[in-house]
Each structure stands twice: as structure tokens, then as C-alpha cells.
Length: 579
Image (cartoon, rainbow, N blue to C red; front, side, top):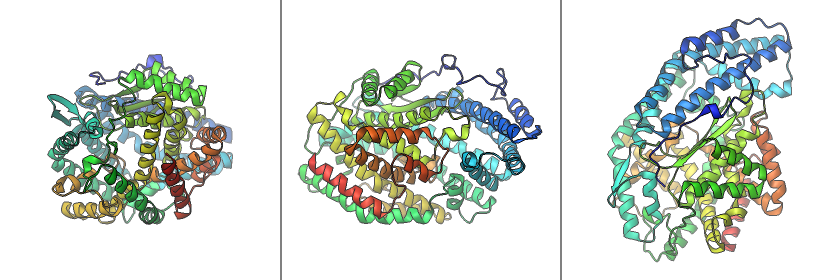
């Protein structure tokens, strides 16, 4: 499973989606002066009609795609091998020198667009979402924030480098932390405990460095918000994320509903696990293993087997999906194996000029790796479904619906799991997945609630932060796991959640989207073809419609209140009972 070689993106095999008409073919988009010169041409252009305004907008969109792809490629190469100094330097130079230079002139271009928009009419329905987002960006922009945002990006890269360098000597081998996870599904309890403690000990070696990184991030973010005229960073970030359709108060109501309706269900699952394992108390290393003591599910041995099996699953659902996934495999758009120096986690990144997705993950042969690829595959299909939209900004949906694409694909794929599993194994993985669905809702509430507190109380000390984390974790964790003797491990558990460091306040989306995905699953139980068709119709809209309309297009309700959560919990509980 382990691969010692980082992926090499060969863009010569992946030509642009269409020929450039504005961006010169020979331009170096990592050269600040060349980039600024091109943007100045856009800024200086005289516009005399609605047609010319729309042409100007398409030229700007072409630049955004080409420039965005350069960023994506540099980021991909850096995360695929964080210990390669040349990759790190290339990404850092771009983030330090080019991106900051573009932001002020980008703001001037946005202002020019809004000014010309008042003079020359465009289709209101077509540009409603774009106009709203552009106005928000103009209202937020402050030139003094540009260097602060650069510092924030570099701190994010530092976090990735610290985590990517974490390895453990275990059973005579040097293993990455994702590779260590495979021991947590082994029936041998002393082995699980030993692996869990070894991994945790390694994480805690860098706890002070990660605390220092986060302290600096909080200070920067608070200053960025203050410069933009906001009382706190949470308010700033909601507007920066273009969250027009729900509020921080809605998020807090989600926390309360999850505590009331989901945590009791999760507690029942944990209690049943404790009984099945015949334990007095559950410990942290008892939560991933099969409670009946069966050996871990191992759906594949090699990455090639994972790719072939997932392609077959997608093909069974829709031959077009299978073909799209095969295209990604054939053109080097997958980097799936865990290895030393690789950044943690998994993601899908769109190469916006060729309009193709790239999937990054850390597979080690576990059942969760299969679901990670299904998840990121959903993101990839989303990217491909809306690739034809000429406006770059509409080739990416709001994050809350992007996660419906991914989580929805996990649930829609259930009927195809026999590609990897026999009937008994399939029932087992379905049970595990529904347990995960129940678990993710309170975990989202944990992370989101913690982030709200951090930025509502920005002058907190590290000790106050740790105490609050422990309080929030206890509130949503079900209270059945014994953490005695593991105080530091629990205190710094949040360090492994990269979103807190890299994309602050990006986590409630998973809760909102999980509820949308569960609605999709309920639809699929009654009419799988129509559920998939609705899913694909909504994906094809990209970001061209407001968030509630995207949910409606898929036949879903945009709602994360008790009215939606309660019946979905009933559906899942019934499904677990049947399995």
C-alpha cells in the first residue's frame, strides 16, 4: 500500500478545456509582474455595452481559471510531498509574492464590474448569485489585510508540514499516522491500545508547536476582522464564506438539536458496543474495532484494486460516472496511497482551466479508505457536472452543497458495496457507515461549537481553551468513553482536526450536508433512479443558484432544525435495527 513517490501532474496530457482567447499562451502566471500586467489590461478596458461587459466578464473568468489552476497545482504538489523543499518553496513563493499582489487589483476589478453593471444591464436571474457575492467581497476587502492573510496561509502550510512529518516507530517499522490507524480495527485489544498510545504520544510531541501556530492564527484572524469593521471574526468569516442563507444563531440551534435528538442515539450505540465487547468501560481505542471481535474489513490490498473496484461501483450506478472516474485514473488525477511526508487527510481539488478534478487521500487498506474515495469521488463528479458553465465562479457550489455531493455519493453507493464485500461483510459495513452518520452530526456540533467559542472569546488563554474544549467534547461525546489517565490526549484532541487550523468555521457544512445526504438516501430507498437523477441535476447547476434552490433541485429541504433531524434519526435507527 505504501508508495514512496509523490504524484507528478502531467498537464501536457490534459489540455485546457477550450483555447484561451485572453490569457496569452506563453504567460508565466507565477511571475507577479506578468500577472499584474494582464489584470491591468482588464482594469483599463473601456466598456460600451452589455455585450462588451459580458465579454469582459468572460475574459476575467478565463484569467481566474488559469490563475486558480496554477495555485491548485502548486498546492497539490506541496501536499503530496511536504518534505520536498523545492515544492514547499514554490508554493510559499506564490502565496507570499503573487497572491498578495493580485488581491488589491482584484478588488479594483470587482468594483469596476459593479460600477459597469449599473450602466449596462445583464440577465438578472443569471447573475444574481454572482452579483451578491461580488458585493460581499468588495465590502470585505481591506488592503491592510493582504499581508495578514498571507501570514495566515503560511501558518496553514506550517501546520501541514508539522503533521505530514509525523511518523511512528511501531513493530519495527516507520509508519505514518494514517498507516497506524489500521491497528485500531484489530480485535487484539492490547495491540489497539499500544498503537493508539504510540500515535497519541507522537502527536503530543508537537502539541506546543501546534498551540503556538494556532495562537498566531487567532491573533491574525481577529485583526483581519477588526480591520474590516467587524466585532468578531465569526461575523467576518460568515460573510467571507458567502453564508447568505443561515446565521450563527442557526448553527447554535443545530448544536442544541443535536444534543437533544442525536446524542442520545449515539449514546445507545456506544452502550451497545460496550455490551457486545463485554467491557466495563469503553476506552478511546475501542471505538473503531468490530464490537463482535471479527477481523477488520479489508476491502483491498493495493491502490490499483481500490481504483478498479470503485470504478465498477460507479459504473453500476451510471456508466457515465464510471467513465469519468476511469478518465481520472488514466490521466494521473489520483494520488491515493499514504506515505511519509504526505500531508494528512483527503481532498478533491479542481484544476480549473482544464476543468478536471484531482483526488488526494491517504489509503492504507481500510474500509474507511473506500468511503473516503467514494466521498471525494462525489466532489469530483460535482466538478465535472458543472464544468461547462462559462463563468468560473459558477463552477464551484456553496460548500454546504458541495458536501451533499460527497456525502450523498457515500449513501447512494450502498447498493454497490458487494463489489468489495460478500453479503455478511456488506451488512457489516452498512452498519458501520450508519454508525458513522450518527457520529458525524455530534462531532460537527463539537467542532463548530468550539470554533464559535474561540472567536467569541479571542483573548482566552491556552488553558481556558483546553478547559472549554473538554467541556464541549463532554457535551456531545455521549459520556461513555473512559479517558482516565489520558488527560493530555483528550485536551489536545482537536489538534488533529485540520479545518480548525486551515479553514476556520468550515465544518458546520458537514452537518448541513449530512442531513441533505440522508434525505437523498431516503429518496433513493423509494426510487433510486430518480434520486440519482435529481442529485445529478443539482450538481450540474454548480454555484449558479442560491443554496436553498440547489437543495430543492435535488429534491431536498434546506433545513437543519429539529423538524428535519428528528425523522431522519428515526429512519437511521430503523435501518440499524434491520441490519
